[in-house]
Every structure is written in structure tokens, then in C-alpha cells.
Image (cartoon, rainbow, N blue to C red; front, side, top):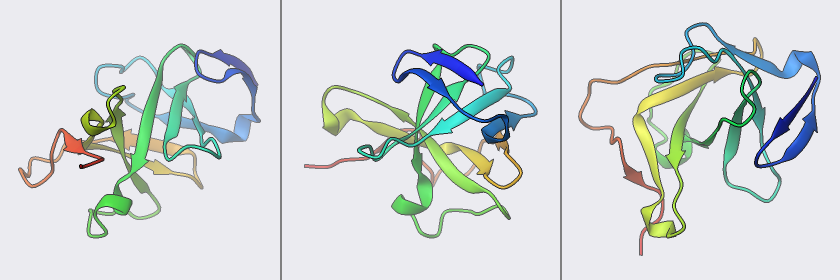
Length: 126
């Protein structure tokens, strides 16, 4: 498969790397198929829509931040990153994680009601 992304230009990947969301992401429920991209020089993963390749979400592994972050069997938890030109303003949504099963290529997003997970966790501090 091939898509033309805004961040990476044209990329080609095999069909078996397509990650499917049964219900899409919050606010993007119509987008069901994505490819997960991990550039070598980046600390972020990129979840790029296949249906609308101009849409991509920066992701960060939540267990890197909190080793006790809730786990779901066979799934890895990622937070959606809000990027900013000022690194001190880069935040991660830890309250609405994206859980990805790399083996089955399935994923979903959920919202935790617990106040101990921030919507705007600062990735970097002074």
C-alpha cells in the first residue's frame, strides 16, 4: 500500500501493518485504518490515517512516563501528543490513551475517569 503523508511524503507499507480501530479515535470516528510510523531520529511514534493521509497523530509510550500506567493484555498504551515549537509546552494526553495491539494490528481509545491522569502532562520540564 502507498499513501502520501504531510510529514513523511509518500510511504509504502505492507497491508499487514495496517492498524484497525473498530470505533475510530475520539473526534475522528470515521477514520478506522492507520499505519504506525517510528522515525529513527524521533522520540515520537506517528499514527497516520490511511483513509485521510493528511491526518496524523504524534504518540508517546505512556509506560515510559509511568511504569505503573494501566496495562491491557497484548496492548501498548500511547498518549496523543500536543506539539508546540516551545518544548516546554509539549503535552501528552494521559487520560485518553490509545491502546495498540501490534500482533493483531487492532487498537482502541478509552477515557479514564480517574483524576490522577492528566489531559496535559508536560513532557519536558526546565
